[in-house]
Image (cartoon, rainbow over all chains, first blue to last red; front, side, top):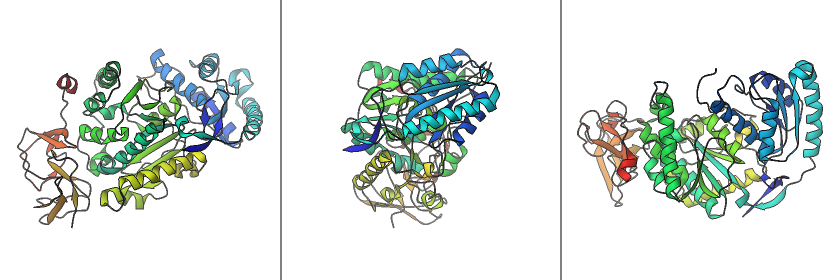
Length: 386
Length: 98
């Protein structure tokens, strides 16, 4: 089973050919927005972080920035920093170069005569990069080159009943073909962590699964909060999810049935094949960003209530098994999984449909969120600003 | 008409796959393949849970074959099962396994 992708100089294969205009901090984010608006195929995001963070918190931001730049869907990156932020230009560039040897340019606003002069230089560099990128042609690669991130957001009981099990089937079939599938959203393992742990490939991986769950719960307790406050969300509850445990037991169906071959910290580069776990928040924008930073070229995303978010780097495929939501938000939903609930299609039939859709999207078909230009991005945090 | 689903044979709850009115019949296919019916004691919103058997106050509620919380009141078969009668309960799943 093959797809048409873009070979990068670091050996990885992308499914998109983006120019990434990366803001190193909040103070560069409007500048990158203006630069990206001038260049065909350029993407950016509103980086609310990059400054006034304690080192362990800043590391999460650095990992996401470097990982997004290194994601093989990116041809090359233009980093824009203000100059005085904690995420200093040399640190950001070094972090990117540790992950990839792809084209990179850098502009510091305070050293380039302010934002207008930086925009001019950034646009000129981006224009050249876009033209170079346009010369890279798609070639055929086996689907073992794919890393697929899985996520659920705006969940309701249909997620655990049908759309997450469907993603689980996809995960099994990808793993069978030598690809990588990522299970994320650690808060939504709570109450189901024993099931994941029982599927760990080694005792060390089993221990790490328990560790990331306990670490997450304790991190919130340190500021006097409990993970159950706000999870399930009001929308989850209105949809019929009662407790976090119920939500979690539905969530982990995305992991299918194969063994867990590795557990990664947030935003770290993924190298293992098979089913892996990444420690991410249940918050969708930051969970998706963490997996994309890890190298996911495509994200498969289930929803019950109807979630529209995309990502600047990776296409996001939306699946719902709630027939009312599918009808109501057809502009935002890519796959209708409700036939699984009503028995009009089998799991085998629908997993064929989903696998074909993943390959079509890998080949260049735009998802609904891409068509709409949606790029919502958040980055996980440990604590408040300093 | 089948208007509910059960996920695991151990489950205490079914999921409504159509809106169900109080006093009407709930019908689902049990894991042995037989159609089971009971009377709805509440109005049930589509995709919400219905108790398929009585659960006494303080006992765990089972869905997906696993505990999803503790019954806050005595729950009768046919009742809506949700935040008004079930509470989350953190279990030490690591110790249980070892």
